[in-house]
Structures are given as structure tokens and as C-alpha cells.
Length: 169
Image (cartoon, rainbow, N blue to C red):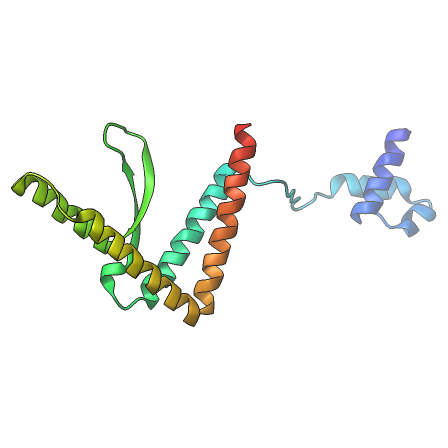
């Protein structure tokens, strides 16, 4: 009998049974109806997994770079992402960089093999990093959609790093 009371209370709470049907003595029929009715969907919201947060962070970064690339008029500073493994490793990681950096790295590799070593690459990268920062600041000042995308990415990055730290402890 306790089970039937518990079930009746659950049926009331979920809307399968009304208080009127229970009051008029139709509780057995109402309970049978509630037992046969199925819930279409139950959504349980809990903390996101680190993997899910990582996917959301990547999607947010892709959105930031897509907006930047669409607004940016200098294609040399368009940002693309790819997966690559470091030298001596097969573990791939995500690398996002402006086209200018890839071009300069290719030039440095060519120079290294042709002339025996790279020259001036660090200075070029520093110069282009500052240009890229200026372009991003200018576009952020003009475009609220870009600012919103940057804020969302920043919030996800902070949440991801916090969760990563918590899970490593």
C-alpha cells in the first residue's frame, strides 16, 4: 500500500492524475492510466563534462575567428585553425594562427635550408603580432557581435580552465 500512495503522489506531481479523480474514488483507474502513460522526455541538467566544455570552447573560438575573418579586410591576417603534432610527438593539438605567420614560417624554413639559418623571424613575428592585436581591437570597437563572441570565448576559456584544474586535483 505505501507504494500505491507514493505512486499516487508522483502521478499528481507529474500531472498524470488530478486531485478530482482521486477524490471521486477513481484512484485505481487513475493509477492504472498513469502507469500506462509514458513520459515523452525527461531532461536532466547537470554539470557539463570537460569534453563538452572543450567542444563549446572550440566552437566559440571558431566563431570569433569566422567573424574576425569576415570583418578583416587584410587576408594576410585571417586566422585559421588546424591540428598538428609537435616534432617528436604524435599527439595532436589545435593551432590557430594568422596566414602571415604560416607564410613567415615557410620563408624561415626555406631560408634555413638555402642559407644555413633563419634571420629576423622573431622580429617579424613580434611586428605582425602587434598588427594583429591592433586589427582585433579596431574591429572590436566597431562591431558588437565580435565583442560578444570574444566575451563568450573568454568565459568558456575561464570555465574550462577552472574545471580542468578541479579535475586534476
